[in-house]
Length: 313
Image 1 (cartoon, rainbow, N blue to C red):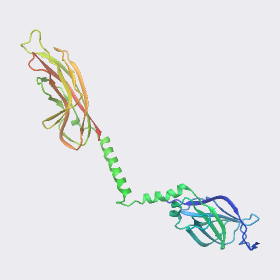
Image 2 (cartoon, rainbow, N blue to C red):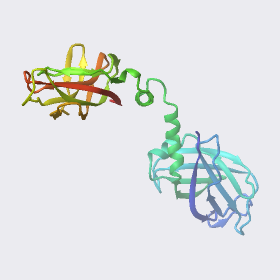
Image 3 (tube, rainbow, N blue to C red):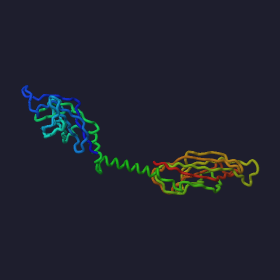
């Protein structure tokens, strides 16, 4: 978006133009005031000078005059950083507007500038230039809008948009049926090492964090040879990840001693696993083991449910 900068001066400068102490009588030469004020934002020029001319008795000038404007880096002497060559302007009720070509860069690069207006070849002195800050920044914004493909800014914006799109896709993606599984089948646990009990079907999954929730119930069953003083066995369950034939256990282990008989003990486990890259043939679920084998009691697991929630990485 193009925006215009107005050169502002809060001082109403009254100056008589004379030669050798004699006031010029010409109505075109007896200008008393030069004022600059904001008068809207033109679309064509980045910087414009708006002035007001009046006679010694306060009447606005309406006759055509030659006006030139220069911008200096010092109150006296110094260097001209930009200027508008003399142009004929016809004030309307004393007010006129003059474009300042190629001044935006100079104004942006110099914090201390002075403006000198010349009317019909006579200087009206230099006044401190004040710039509307947002208008100078608008020039920078226009340059940013025009960033071309391959530029550092365009590259950064493209990378940022790619990250946003990837994150949004993961957040919007619904869990597939393969990331939840209920197993009504009873499982007889008779191993002293962790054993895969149940879990999600194998799937190819993107990089990310996967939270695994498992629930179920367990009880001990006496073997036919056990009639009195039947020895129970402590059971450990934990969330696990299965990749092919390899099991990876989570830290959240649950240790308990199942009750004997039909009464069951409910259990639940929760933990997460991280995938650093897209991985195929992954399953998440429940693993369990006996603390001791060879006792007179076996442990039965049933009504097990595993569900996985994804978190973008």
